[in-house]
Image (cartoon, helix red, strand yellow):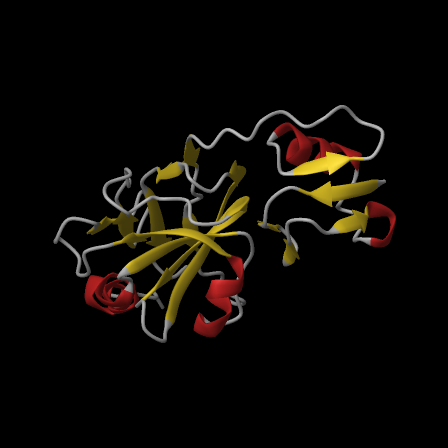
Length: 78
Length: 130
């Protein structure tokens, strides 16, 4: 699917997109699938060929749910 | 024979993180090193270094050993501003100068520049040797 970037953004997978550039998701990593394009479109970050105009971007407050880390030692022998 | 690591031994690692983790970065991926942070960073918080000074707290682990808790962060001033739009799923601690201190994961969240982000409290726990 072809999409055009509305604003600069960084995506998981060390991907960066610049406003004004057009990309084809078919030649991007498979993780960039339609579901992910839809999330970007819903945030107003991109326009997708054949889809309605993306909703207006809405910067707001977000909460990051950070994961705990646990280091557990495992003995090879008694 | 029993195995043992006194609290002071485990605390060495936790103190290193608390003493050097002056910046919390919301990132899109794991950076390979400090220089790599800028390529994946979306926003930051300045943290007060040192356990017991406000942002870092040491305590006994939930099961055994020791843990370091990084306190919840709420937007204030430029702390918590989303500087770059993107998908955050990593949190990185660094000294803000040249050293990457710690990396953990977060539930993926979209952040749009111009908005703000908060974080929950989270911890790093070191179990006693088994």
